[in-house]
Image (tube, rainbow, N blue to C red; front, side, top):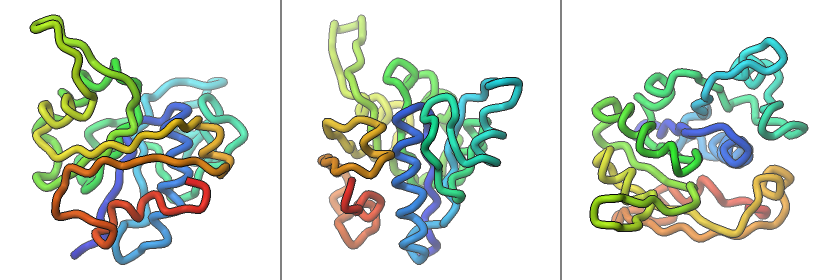
Length: 191
């Protein structure tokens, strides 16, 4: 089996903090994961420079996680489709209000066997039926891929600083376990 390609969908404070974990961890499992981790960045200008350019040259998200270095194998990509099209594992870390729009752009553009893990906090509401539902349900419904959830009472700064943090992962892939590699994404003493 070829090493799995990982894309982080989002690059704000939380996405960048998670990138510090994913970037380091993928390099520890070269047989299981491609060492390059793509991170989709909504392009914006910071002091006259593109944020992706800053991240890729200085290895720091100076706007959303200043002062914290990102691993050099985390590559900022401004095009959502380009960042995600070859990914085996998509890690969603965008604000919940953007999930629908982002997923609709990805429909039909992903690998057939891609899986997702969401770290997105919050619930979504639908006017029709007056129903609250989970972000993982929305991703699964729109993209037609399995989605698991990783949640904890964590702050981005604590994760980026490698402070002790805990989280729980809810797997929806019955065939995946610790040896499959999915959980190896997050096995650090700190997180």
